Image (cartoon, rainbow, N blue to C red; front, side, top):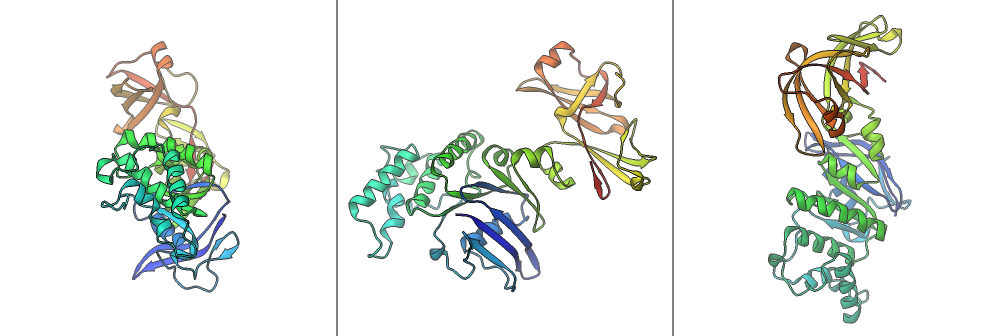
Length: 357
């Protein structure tokens, strides 16, 4: 089931939660709405579900597979919704929780008792909780409860699955396990799914596409590779992971950042301020200059535990810098805390006022 959001605005009194938002989600895609608190992502999810009503404008619409559902109620939209805090019925067993949506259907649409049991057992196998159907939510771990909540949403065979920070209440290790599980589950069932998260790593790992939101608007839509490696705004590159920021100015086609300079956009950029964003893994530490643009810095801290060596430095003007070096490259040319080094930029993203390269 495809989703199209067309010219949607939502205000709460004087506060604007969404401002003229447009978005297309193809059938069968798993999409992450990513952004900081207050960016509008949960409001957008609730509007898709029918839990919130957008402001009335003549050119707005919410389309499921080409049909405008803006005037339809939650029950008429056939969506499954999974909340952050499970929202399971504590007095019901796992089996009863999953079966609930089927049992409350109108009599004419309600499956037989045998069909309900067959469906619930099929879902228990899908969420890998076979044999736990007689337990109560209080007897399950947080990760197990969230899987039950997901099975309950899937029991009614929704055309669209909506998840509001589904792993936000869980600890880091369980979150990581459930991310992989959700990705495998989606690859199996292919239900169009939209999930809200403020966790960049989660969005990059799980989603087919990421919708980056900021201040009631969509900043960028793209695959995880596109939004991470080809950001279209300063906000996107800064929000998606750690980044080093250099301030400079463009003169005669060169952007000067402290002790080094780089080629900048054309002549119209002369005299303008420039910002250079460099990921920690795109900085290289050198014992001496090698001909590439580099600045002098001093190592203040080294953390070698983990998949890479993380190095904190102090650059010119006491600017804090962060570098990530692969262990094999670090072992070939190690440094010590307090060492004076040269920091070279291997790959960067520059923004010069209205220009970006």
